[in-house]
Length: 187
Image (cartoon, rainbow, N blue to C red; front, side, top):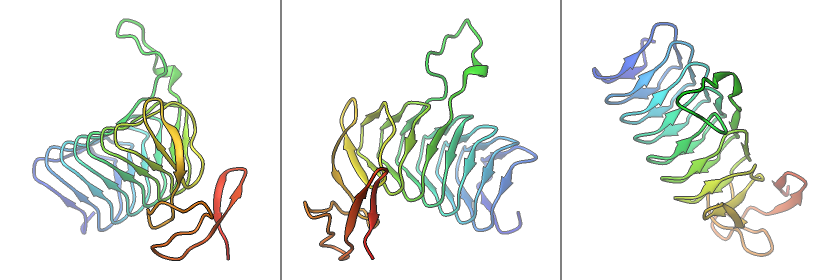
């Protein structure tokens, strides 16, 4: 971990695997069996639990907790104070760690500030979850969702811009077509 930057207030438990070029900022805690990829930016006051996997080039903004069962693929953006859950019906008195549900966030997805992702769901590739949305079901690739509960209101490009009705991006020029999982780029 010679080329990993960790602020002096960050806690990195022995055994954590952290890729080269990653930065871990103030008062963050990375647990012993967490895996963080290369060139990630882990913001202030972030908690990365045991058995969490974070891909390469991810950005985790301030005040995000990634609990056991969360998997982020490459280039995922987690906005400030967004929330993951990992148990569907938690109780303080009743241990339920054997009921953890996996949450998968696929490559390039954006999770907006203060959104909540309920456990057991998959967020599709390059999906865009609006700020404050509450995701209660799996989301298609390239879907734009907002609200509580989150509802799809459109489609977004790899570059993050909203697509027109013809599934064309006026910003970068990419064109898409529908599939059973959402959208794919037309070649």
